[in-house]
Amino acid sequence: MNGWILKHLGDPLYRFGHQHVGDIVDPSSRTEDLGDDAVKTGSYGIANLKRIIPKLIEWTKQDEENYDELGTLYEQVVSQCKRYMRHVSNNIGAVYENYKT
Image (cartoon, rainbow, N blue to C red):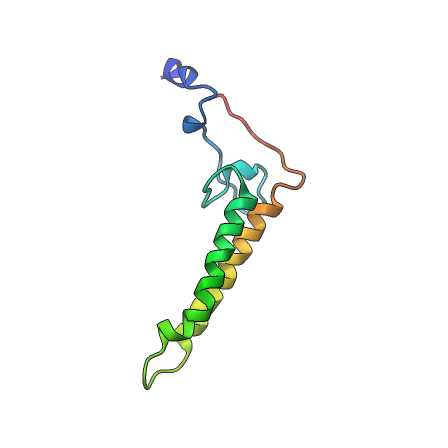
């Protein structure tokens, strides 16, 4: 097994990064990692959220219903926006961890 690991050393496809709870040490091993450019990824994600927000009422409106579902979805959109922002801010003063095995 060690030989297989060393054979793939340096290949980003096989890179392993620990998932951290709380403060992120290595911004290249974050949850929901969609690439190597958090700013670009976050920009695309926020652009999508800006498309979703104006439609939330239309997509959740039901006759004779309150706005509980709308409130929940809006909170989720805000939380996702915060995640995108946190992914970018984690690059400031970052420490990258590269485990060989």
